[in-house]
Length: 147
Image (cartoon, rainbow, N blue to C red; front, side, top):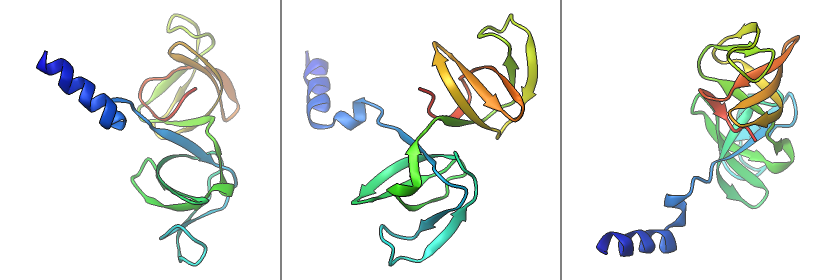
């Protein structure tokens, strides 16, 4: 009974502990400034030069989002430079398949760290486009959010 009340207390007063609220967005342009703070008056910390790169939102202040990337770099980006994410990065080498099954024809090896744009997802598979190839990837061992 004590466990039930403790769980109830945690869910009511600390819902963020019980529910994963990972929000991923991606870069809208090929050149995006990352700043030290949430405003244009803060200096530019570094510049991303990769459109569609997924970033995780870890804080919000007015029209700025504090983000962190796969390499643990963080900073503030204006919301106008971000969009809903349709991409992820592979964290291990993977195989791109013709159909959403490991028994289908393999198309190409996708190396760790590759930026992947997905078209649609079903179950544990996403139809993706990378380079000149289109096929299906199993969505384990990825950084970013699929669907």
